[in-house]
Image (cartoon, rainbow, N blue to C red; front, side, top):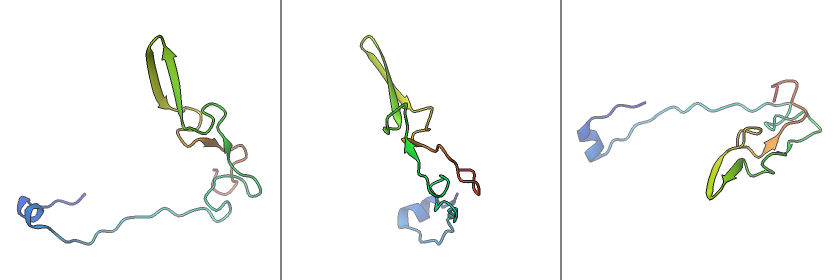
Length: 83
């Protein structure tokens, strides 16, 4: 968080900020899957990352609970980073 005054917001403020970056796993190259395997398409949402439930004329769409919206699942997780 950066606090600025109303005057700085009006006139414009230049500042340098540090944004932390995440480091990917060397073993799986950031895929989360064991080397030699790869993530597979989610069987619940079929890769969409969202599931839809309809009752009558109402329809509710939510994030897929199986893949958490990624659209793919990891069958064989990486041993080094645990997927």
